[in-house]
Length: 161
Ligand SMILES: [Fe+2]
Ligand SMILES: [Fe+2]
Image 1 (tube, protein in one colour):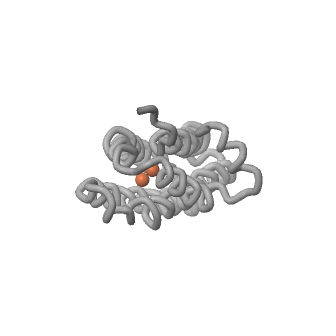
Image 2 (cartoon, rainbow, N blue to C red):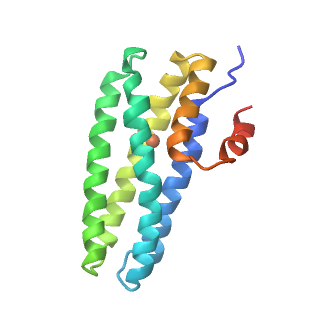
């Protein structure tokens, strides 16, 4: 049977945007030579990270009555906490005009591992266990948090049609 909806495909796009914002910050501005650029670029990353984590924790990870992925969800939640702790450290680095490169490298490693676990294990399982209607509803709920701007829904809709 052909699979029409895929939360995995949707999340790979979301994750790609998120990861690239961090890579951009790390290579352009984590070395404290341009604090204004560091603040601007790290803020862009956080503006994407915060709603992404919120959508996963408030909507997707709450589906655990429907799916058999509870042990993975526990790991993923722990990783969110670790990621957010390093984000706070980098905020402090930037506020104190310090080099954030070491923390940024750690964050990049941690984020890559986390996204891999979601993309290789968690989202494929979720796709198998939900029907197309449930997946569509889930994607729309996530979009209402991560992409609330008008018009974005139609634009993205063509990717999943
Ligand atoms: Fe996550
Ligand atoms: Fe994610």
